[in-house]
Image 1 (cartoon, rainbow, N blue to C red):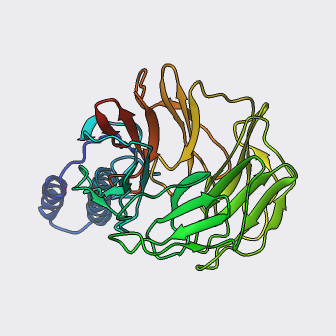
Image 2 (tube, helix red, strand yellow):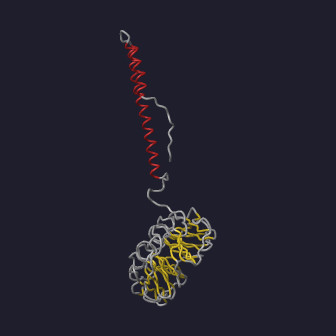
Image 3 (spheres, helix red, strand yellow):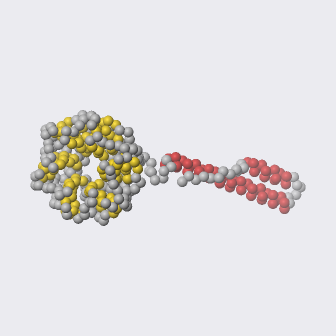
Length: 371
């Protein structure tokens, strides 16, 4: 809050001293000291003291106003924003980061462990990785050394907990993990020990908050969690008997380091926080129905550690930031329609802690950094 002080005129001390001195001089010309002389002397002292007090008050007011102005200048006049903390409120101009394509599928994950999500191209002759430099993608290399497939689906998540996303192949006879060494994928091992399926959908997210991504199965009877031990997935645990009207998601909307269960229902977006060993009570974070024309995503676009609600609509990419207990203050981060020729992704390829908008188009990979 800016504080203004009414400017007042204060006469200098020396002027009052002159007036007082002249008064005293006139009294000294009398032959004898009278009662009037004493009174005049007292008045002179009183006036001098008052002058000093007025001068001191003026100096204090000016100093306080200067301190307030300096504090506002240093804080940028936004009390809620700590100095040095960057805020993100839009996606920038598209940048052409690569001309390559993916014969089977494209992915984005930090397989090198440097904090930047890399471009992963699943081709017929192997899994190729193009490391992110923060402003583009570097040279590609075949991390599997030959063809590699997934019977059901492929994922790239850090299940070993070493900071590098591993290659996860969901096959008919189990969930195989091929750990990242930082420059290639090592030997595969079956982390479920046998066949393991999901009735509706499979997810891989760190729901326990220990730094290792867990295996999550959305089945007809509820949500089962198989925590990662770092070398395999433990026995299934029923964490919720709930379901999702439209779709289920898993993201850390509360910002406590544990991925939460997000249910897109007819009456709104419900968040069911993870306690690390179970799901807590659900709450409607949108307060009413919420829809996405093309797709819904939950990623940290603002860079504050909490996953935000991202709605890809016909007239743009809308971000509804998480407050930690609700989604509020919707804003169009592209300012108008924004489409992807093949597929849209949200990944932190710049490595600044905020997810970027990545478009896989017919002419390559385009990145719109969060800014």
